[in-house]
Length: 187
Image 1 (cartoon, rainbow, N blue to C red):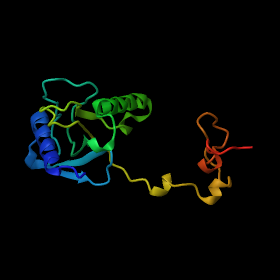
Image 2: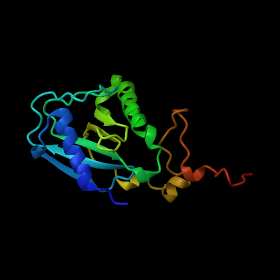
Image 3: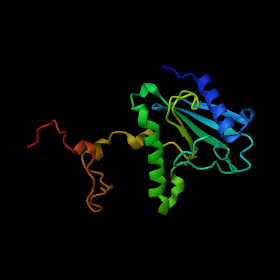
Image 4: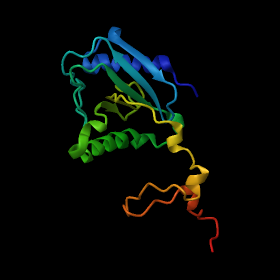
């Protein structure tokens, strides 16, 4: 089922206006077509924020940050009800995982995990009748599909083992093709 992009765009503009004081006239909202579990929108702000933007909603939310000055792009993810996920706890779980990720990577570089600026996990009028997360945009590059493709014949035969497992950093990892299926009897 195709998303109601007009309703989503109106929700995004209203949320940024009402909760963060950002003028809808200065927002460029673009849907990311290849998203599956969420309806994902990139929000470009011209000009970038000139000051910190705190959420002005009536209820403070855990695990959220202020939008920093100089921010020019945000990500707004709206839960896709057709994704067959448990929507009642889904947004809270995603927000908590992002917070745990930032905390776990704090000694390395907490900037690896996007900050959450606001979220809604209730199907109420305040959240536009949808569950969503407003978060920091992280630039980067798309990983090529080969990164997650099946192993080549050489890799499957064991000719190329340069990776290691977390449980044994000195033992080469077995490629997925070399691991017997649980349904296949082995000798």
